[in-house]
Length: 165
Image (tube, rainbow, N blue to C red; front, side):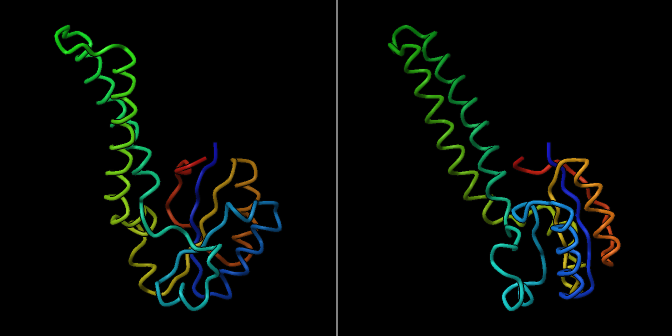
């Protein structure tokens, strides 16, 4: 399972040095991203390195699970009431529809909520620091951390499983 660690750099040059150091240890470029104030991101951070601004994907996954569970329970209750005439296939269909509706509605709400890293380190981002986000397996993450620290980045108190591993 991949884990996420966050490092702060005082400017773009230091962030790029830390990013290069992480790449040099073998971290896949798709597992690296930068988070910065919006004016810095728009001017200096390439699109492929920008971290998502919202909590949309994790919210959609949670909504699919919740909606599917509610749809399944509603379908099974409907099967238990004979006058409704719902079969087990109908219960499965209700679960699928519940998952779709839950995913869609949660994604809409999640699109308006900043991602967890932005919420936690909002003050550092607004102060002009650039955050390096590294998602990797534990052994590779430890090797990358040593290289990133040598490049001058500062570790921030954040370690969690990656949202999508």
